[in-house]
Length: 253
Image (cartoon, rainbow, N blue to C red):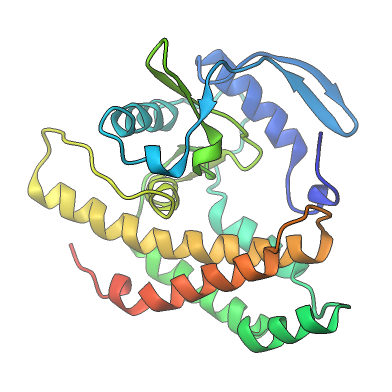
C-alpha cells in the first residue's frame, strides 16, 4: 500500500515497469495486481538483513553478486534510459517545504538545514563535478538499505525488494548509496588502477546519495504520517555530506 503523498515524488508507473523488467530477469517476484493505492506481488522468502549482517563475509559477496546481476540487465522496449539521479533531485528541490507549522520543527529546519538556494547550488556543483567521470549508466536499485535486502538462509541467496526508486542511473551512485549503509569490499581479478578509479567514483557519488536522501527527508517531514523524525534524519544526512565533502571531492584516481 502506498504511503501518503508519495505520488509527489515516486513514479508509480515506473515502479510497475520495474517489477515487470526485474521479474523477467529473475530478480523480482511476479506482479499479480495493480490498484489505485498499491500493488500485489509475490512473497519473497527470507528475512531482511540487519545492519550487523551487512559486513558478514557470508553475506556481502551475495549482495555484490546481486548488484552485478541487476547492473547487467538490458533495457526492454521503450524503457527510459536517462539517468535518474539529477532529474529526480531537481524534482525533489521543487517539493522542498518553505516552512513547518510546528514551531519546534520549523526552528530546527531554519537553523540546521541549508536554504533552498544553497541546496540548488550544491546539487549544481555535484552535477558538474560527478559527471566529469563519465560514469557508466546501468539499471540500478537506488535504495539498497538493509531492509530492502532479503536473505534466504536455506538457499543461501539474496533478493532485493522495493523497486519504487529503481531505474537506469549511474553505477557508482548505486554502489555509493549502498556503502552509505555498509562499507565492505569484494575481491576480484582487477587492476589496482581500476580499484582506485571505482573507489574515487563511489565515494564521490556517495556524497550525492547523502544529499539525495537529505532533500527527500524534507519532503517526507512535511507530508508523511509515519511516526518517524524525517527532519532529524535529514539533518544527519546533510551533516554527513558536509563532513565528508572536502575529503571525498579531493580524491583522485
